Image (cartoon, rainbow, N blue to C red):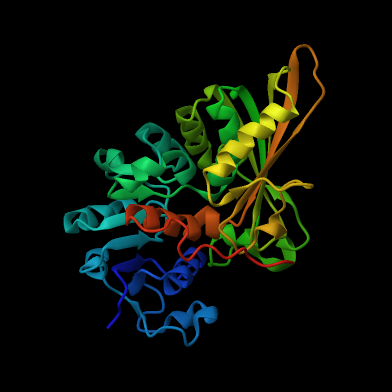
Length: 351
């Protein structure tokens, strides 16, 4: 019998995010991976979808309802697609289990924005206020006292962490131009034209410019952090990477904000955030955080001109870890009152 204090169910575990979440749970000192629900690979070992888990667990994929999967567990970790999750949450709420959701269904407080950017009608808008937005660097105390957490999107996490220091200091307002470069695993495990290797491996292309579903999420979060009249211009770019997101965000700030002051703002965020760091002697890069739950942040300042400076903010994360499953585990740790860093301390690999 397991001596671990808590039990977790993973609901929707056959995708890349589910695989990373289960890998972290199997390493966790306090939380046992109890059940995995999936409509794919039913009855098969987890290694059928995730070869890296060969021989490390006896847990198998089960075709059971979310409520049945989570019964007897302390927390349900949802790796279901957008638009599917919202229909499954009510039965989990009836159980009283803690919920950490990786979909976009409960990240926005504005149901009209959800309906527009996700191109559907939200089936349970009355449940939106039950969820806390799961960016620990902004909402750690609220997450700790909540039952339901909506983990942020990968683009949103990267962009928000790049700009949080400016928002918190009242320096983020007006137009912000963001280019976010992403790896192919963010599109999921099912093959698609946009992830087909012969094309992706030699290509760069944009998709959903100005209309990506993470746009209102970023705007809402940074406004809550102190941004004013934010006008986000968000352009995602597909890159020949498997993992990783790299964000460049450009805006203008008053010219009296020099390198020393801005560095201090960034260092304040890092000091209270175990997984956010500002590298010295270089700017953020994807290879330095790949496979880990870390986010690197940094900035570059122009010379003053007409009372302003242009600041370009940079950040890099692994989209499957800090941008997905790792952040979900981080939120789970906070919700359960555990060490926030449990099973997430590894620094990744190089190169």
